[in-house]
Structure formats: structure tokens, C-alpha cells
Image (cartoon, rainbow, N blue to C red; front, side, top):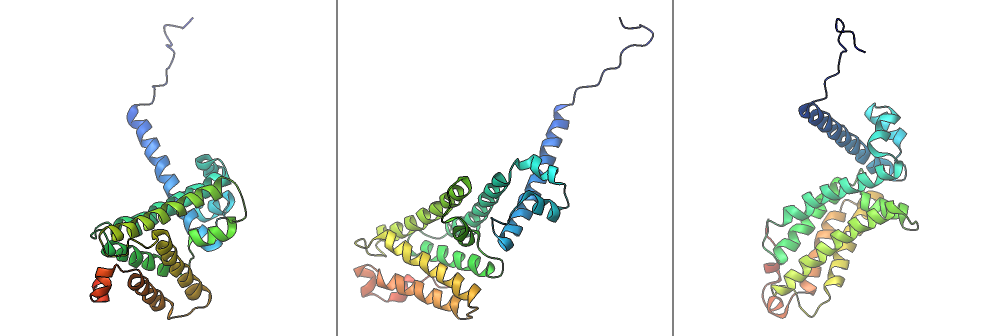
Length: 232
């Protein structure tokens, strides 16, 4: 029984506001971890990413980082998702401001060029990740492949819209056109990052114009090919 002279002390239940603050703080901490992990993965690759390495970079304990992800694999997948979200915002959504057709396709390529040029020193997660996981199976490879496939689908759709607008030949294979555009970016990354060729960016831009010219519709081909190009 409780002594009436000394009533039992009760701990007040945490308020909803307290719980909300804890949740926000946890989300902010996770964001910091993912940002640091993405920077690390850009330098050493997804395969080099580990709970310990991220803990060292962020100044956190291993158990603190582990509490937010639970495994190295989940950390790697979170980095892939974050990279994809940033790539989508900077390359895809920014281009959506342009009219559908060649102007939008050009904007996609220009934004992709900017992204690739910025990654010459750090590296591209899509490209380095493909080298690391091309011969493997598992959730990390699947997450990476889904992200790349999503982007390739968006690029192919942009080509198809240019065909619908009558700016690129409808008889041409949209998949082939998108494949060739993707090839320019891969060549740019290899030439600029590995071979340090200062002319790589200009060659990639010239290659893109050649693609537009080669696949132009009959109506566009009869006019000035430069009409296809979005003027800066």
C-alpha cells in the first residue's frame, strides 16, 4: 500500500510535441549520415562504404549509425536512393520547364552534361556502381539497376515526345536514339575522367547535335538543322 504521507511519484508521459521533436531530430541525423555516405561513396565507391567508415566521417559511433540503417546493405541502398533523387531533381525535373520535344531533350542532355562534368573528380555512382555490381546479384544491385532503368525510361520518353512533335523521325527507333545519347555520356566520363582529355565535353556536345541531325524528321531535315538546337 502507498503511504499517504509519501505519495508515489509518477513520471509524466512524453507529450506529442516531445515525440515530434525526437522524430525530427532523428530524421535530421539520418539526413546528415546519408549526405556523408554519398560523399564517401563518390570517392571510394559503394563497395567501400561501411558503417564504420561513415561513423568515422560523421564523428558518430558505429552503433549510432547502425541504429538508423541496421545494415551496410541498407546504407548502400539509401545512398543509391539519395543519389537518384538528386540526379532526378538536377537533370530531369529542371528540364521539364522546357517545351516537350527537342528543346526538352536538349535540356536533359545539357543538364546531364553539367552533372557529369561536376563528377569528373568525384565519380558517378551510376557508372562506378555498375562496374562494382555488374556481375553480382542482390538488393544493392537491384536498387542501382532500377534507378538507372528509371532514368533511361525518362530519356527514351523524351525522345518519343520529340518524335510525336515531328522534330525527330517517327520511323526511327527511340530506344536506339536514347542508347546513343547515353553512350555519349559514358564516353565523356571515360575520356574526361580517365584520359583527362580537355576536349571531351565539346566532342560530346558535337555528338549530340549529330544525333539530332541524323534522326531529324524529313520536314526538319529540309529546313536548317540548327533549328533543332536550343540557343543558349
